[in-house]
Length: 243
Length: 152
Image (tube, rainbow over the protein chains, first blue to last red):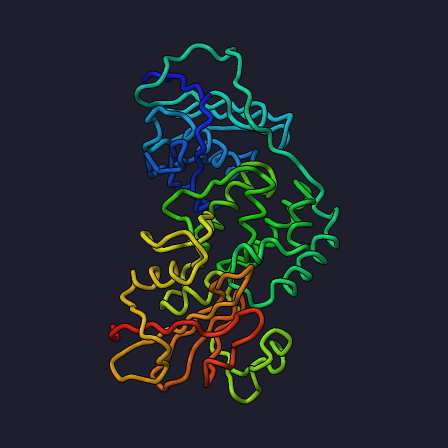
């Protein structure tokens, strides 16, 4: 068996939907997008890491996120049986998973290289390659600014009243002030979205304005119950929510 | 389901307690425009934003004409201002208010089999009300058009 190297260096926006069962294998649907957010590839992936010593869910998510970022079709039935360790859940961050058919090295927040079985991948042999610059997960103290956020949230709900106009709703003073909080608002918004479950409020506009990103694939636009899943996944992958 | 008495008095002054009833929980995932078209999965608005749905083919404009075309994609056609109940037809009333000299759609209500109307109040709840004027207000404006289609 060979262990080719897949080097992840694209900036394509990609994410996975995770069943996230800590006690079992993780099933994912990985989706790859083009620059216009159209789905160009969709794969079912099974990752099995029956190893102790680290948060399997977090690791698996990062792995899948990273696999999905590659252009290489290496993701079908990606199985690993191995051992691992993590130094800390956030940078500095190092995890090594050695397994049957899969060896992955995680550094610098997101996985930077992955050794694994697959097709059309660069042959193994260059772990010391210069790593591409990737986003780093970040930690923001979620207790900070919580009363400010909650006050603005409540005031916004009064200000918008019974309006159906998206523009009127997001241009309320208090909503604009939430956007003005910048990244410090993000943990609160994501926790709020988690609480709201399948009845998410209009947080999407603020998230797009603050992050300058949109992880929602085109086919899910307008379907807010679906959109919230993509944003919460994004929050985990970017370190704003725990996995 | 009990009505939230007085809850909307400030924004919908015509909504008299005893003449309307809340018929759903609060759900910010769909709005009145969607609800009038029998859709409780999407938030309809011609914003072009990822979080909003707008029927393909309808102009992305906040105009009465664009909303008529949007409802047209669901089989509705304008029928003047005739809000009377017609057996075999489903009717939608479009509300608009004047802003900067132009009529801007703000709300829509759908007629029920009992002749009453159902309105989704923005991100809040669905309500059943007796008359169209019950939700005429500064925020929603007045009814500017009635559309109808054969009952599905």
